[in-house]
Length: 382
Image (cartoon, rainbow, N blue to C red; front, side, top):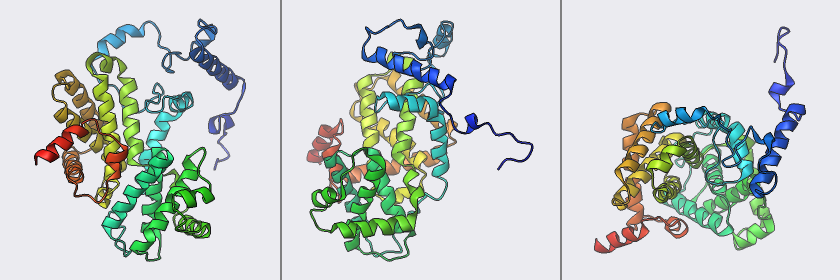
């Protein structure tokens, strides 16, 4: 609340469509037209603020010398306003990151330290076996993949499931987790998806009419009563993993193009995405913050790609990724020994999963690792 000596500028609290903002929006509209159809006014002088090629702020000519001096230096990972969306490649997401990327990143850092942190012992108050929960996470991967829901929906559903089991006072059993997991997906989809399944379709297609629509509604009401609406803005290991790759790819574009094999980079991203889904299978990893787990998944992915693609993974590639990881550790204050321990644990669980000792199978079914054939060959030899 403001004191008598403070004057609140509404424009600073909530951006409004004043004349200046309208002019910026018109520039963006013109820029989008040019990108959709290069024949439409390609030399428009009104496009000074935004580069039509990469949606980033256009650099002045005198920045070229500065780039040459710093082309071999890994840049900041603060998600500054020059970043764009590497994963989705959509203009709306690009513009959101352009304006709010940095604020969103630090907001997520706050979220993982607050009420959304889940202890690894959250199942102790229930009669739910850890293996049963792992099977449920695996089933949730299958559901979200078949329905073609976004990864964000899957991770939010897992958060809803686990935080509910942590906070609820009622004691649940193994037979209850199917309804809780199913309802968690339904609730998450309404928050994340543009076109979520209706309750009737969801109940029939996902639940195969195992539960009535009334049972799902009652469970959803119970979940939201116990956890509160604020959980819907919680963050995940996947969110941080994306953030770090956004920043790396677009703040170091010149370095990557000069030193890195783009196929290798895409393989690393695919493997890191796989590992973020792997770690949520096991309650053990809740002892680590999401941002720490995200870096751990990235490091493990780089090590796996380096191992299975030794011939393609050149020394200059390794140097770039090593610099990036060292920078991440220093920038966000991660402990090196803790990170080494986490990476070894992720690698251990990864091997456990691949050997067929895991109760879940859908990760390999719906996410094809680039070195999956090598894994199958290793398994046959053993």
